[in-house]
Length: 425
View (cartoon, rainbow, N blue to C red):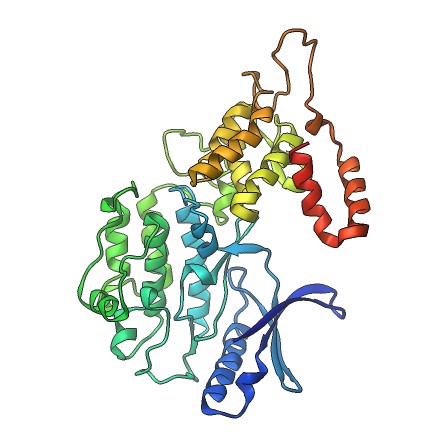
């Protein structure tokens, strides 16, 4: 329906996402009027919300034939894109991510706003592990709804039965959507698929296969009753609100869950047998405390920060910004460079791509030789003391200088090119 630009607000001096509507959609036709109304509705719905889990709206305006919304600029990727890369969300990740989502939905519902289109494409994960709900384009504002209750609006695989049936809806359509999202993160696919007619019949009349019984999912059975309640056909049988959904999930997990799922996973739980990770305030494992490591953000001491930075750069080619958190988590669980890269390779699900990743990582992995996390001792004959691979000898100052020189020829993309070159040099 339009174009989204990354823009800069010179008055407040911050980056923003500038969402514009296509001029063809303001030509005066009934269809154009509907689209324009939904565009304003998005600004009004999200504009009345102020929550860290919801993409903020700063301003709505019209300039000539262009209508626009100035929104919070979020660095990250949608869950849909991560799943397209076959990133697997672990049992340690999912409770924290769902907790963030349900907190955001709870805030929206308290303000009388129902999203009505909760799906992976509308959920953004930042590299720091924060979850953001985006795109309130078809949201309903309780006291001034744009649409009539008989209109069927949404994404079919994530729509509640009442949305298909055209009966009265309320905030529990988002409880259903969140339940479908949970199912997708657990199993890798929606609970129902098929043509529109087939899909509608299944959503209205059938119950999905419990996540624990889906082939290849291998999920704890405690998710099954939670999914069944969230996806109940009758809204009265569902969780009454997002907070009830969250409490049921946390009670089933039986372990503390950090507000930021990805950040929480970098801290080992004292009970290593538990698949769930304690909050970030919990004690770290012996010999591992958190420190700072340049572009990789918060890392664990005992690791060569250059190794972790290169691991992040290499993995980012396959999973995007999520690499930052995945490297942190793997570093907290591994005691050697070779083990680190083997752990990271699990996130590259395509066999050919995984072999390519391990091939690039092999020179770095050989440096560990079982000497502990981040060790750089070489193990061949004639080695005296510690040998450092050429790529690890590149200082940050050298890389920054290379980036500045290259930027004069190719612009800002120099930063990415230099990172890739450093990982292979």
